[in-house]
Image (tube, rainbow, N blue to C red; front, side, top):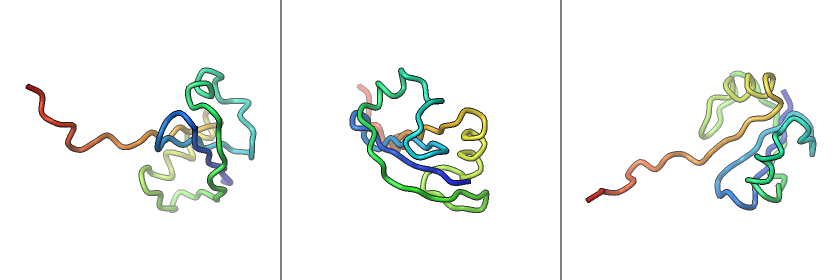
Length: 84
């Protein structure tokens, strides 16, 4: 599946995957507003065997087929600090 990846100007390390270049028709307007200006980052072809850094490709493919987009959030911090 061909996929286009964008990063938002307002959310660091947050990426939006869509199934067609510059086509955000199926992405909720509230999400687009939250991300800010979208900047094209990457075009790739996803397969179930493709390795991605932070998420399973099969998960992305299924979400793209279901909703037309996939939102990749930054990983949770491993050591958020002590609370007193």
